[in-house]
Length: 318
Image 1 (tube, rainbow, N blue to C red):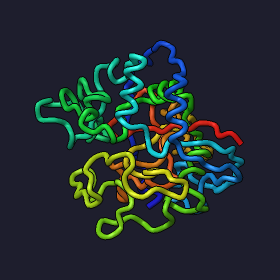
Image 2 (image 1 turned 135 degrees about the vertical axis):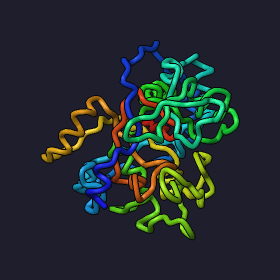
Image 3 (image 1 turned 45 degrees about the horizontal axis):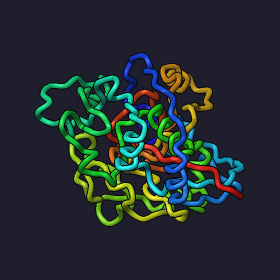
């Protein structure tokens, strides 16, 4: 499995366009207080990063190491459409997808009214759709965000996530903080609930792809695309959907310590990429077995997709 998966791209290609500049975002003390108070406390101490049981070795999942973690508070779920709408209303913020005028949409969700779309060589299921953004996730007049206020906000870039986090008085988590939170007090386990693998019959603890990717999703877990951000069972720290549903941006760059030529060549084309964790509803064991705590993916910071979200953390007073 390792060699096969390591050769496959997981997420979204870059826009191949220059970054866009935005105005400064200030902290909103009132919003910051409300959001922080609602967040889950995550205890500090010795945290684990990585795993002894790497499934995609060329992604840098191993080795397992320990790191010191200060206590913090983390959003119980990824930021929702409703929460992001509050931010936009307060700041008049315009996301990168809106500024570019287009974004990537998974082929099965492209509305027929859009007509022919341009695909990406090697990952043809990603289609360029004009006027796709966080409000109209799959293209013009789809109004996904308005219809699903409790679902994770998507079609947000790393830069958009950074802006929201600053407004909320917090920041994006590091990889070490994210993994520590995702484990919920467990040790070197694959998933937030332990090591029991999700399947397509009687164990569907998270929102991932079921069926044959990318042709058929049976939605055995109840969802073809995103689920409400608070779906499924919380982990030991009261955090929902730490794997599956949507990828989550972290504060860290995407780096892999490897001497392999093939890894170095892959990283050469990913300069400036940011690290995402957790996998999404588009992940399947046959293609993107990255809905695991130690799994990692790199994405261009200006890219936005219908399966990329984020959550915020705040410092916890000792």
